[in-house]
Length: 132
Image (tube, rainbow, N blue to C red; front, side, top):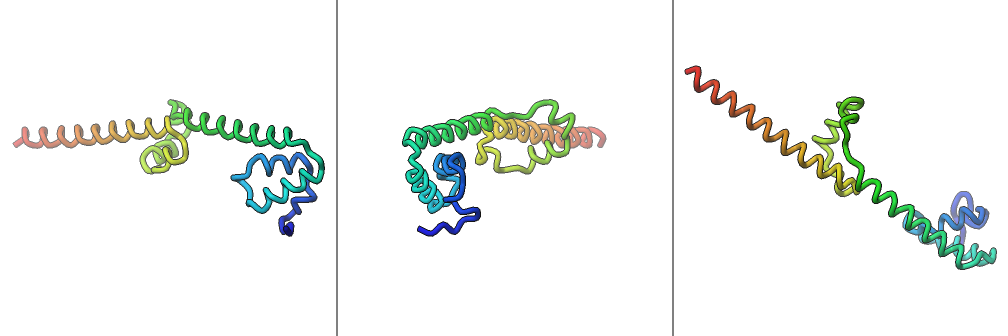
């Protein structure tokens, strides 16, 4: 198998090779295969490779959990009001991107905004009919 990567996979440090093998979803399958072969050539123990995979899975799980628990706070509305409102109104990818809590808050925000608009229009309709 030819090493067409820049820098070549075979010239990387053992730590970098472990990162490649530990995160196969982030890398080209060919790069993972070359890194695995190179680690075997360097007599890296299988336990180290398994540990690299385990640590990567644990890191990914922590990132997913952190994203799922992340939500909007009052400070978002104070310090970044326009950005927060635009995200709440126009972003459709929060749930898909793993931001479960933000997606739930977005849903309630949109429902509340819709209810507020309906009440506003009903109020104006009632006021306008009472004038005549």
